[in-house]
Image (cartoon, rainbow, N blue to C red; front, side):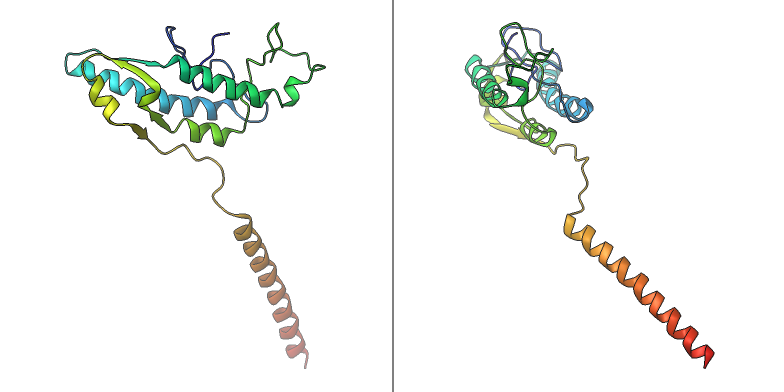
Length: 180
């Protein structure tokens, strides 16, 4: 396994989505792909920008960044159920290293891949200084989870229950008035 930065960027290799430690055991992989697509699109836009000006740009993750990121992911996975010595699955390679699964939920992954720190990359070619000068490029992550809080849900439920109870009381009192 080649260690990767954000699971799809490896120094000196062709980089494609859905690399090591991208799969999920609890949600849709589409959420991971969307996050990666936004990240990759930002990288590509810088290369295309340089090309449109007649130049070339190479953007490659620094080896130290890739290694640090991979150590973090592997450290977190070592505490997961996948790391149990009795868990023999395709998630692990022959050496017992978990190479397939992401170590967290989708939202933290989306947040981690909603910006590029250009200092994490070796950037070469005309226009490299301009890209490096940006420091960090950020964008909004795709939000697919509900934006309604539990408090709002409870308030809505209580309001509905109150309205139903008030309606029942009103109807019963109206019936009582009509009988008299």
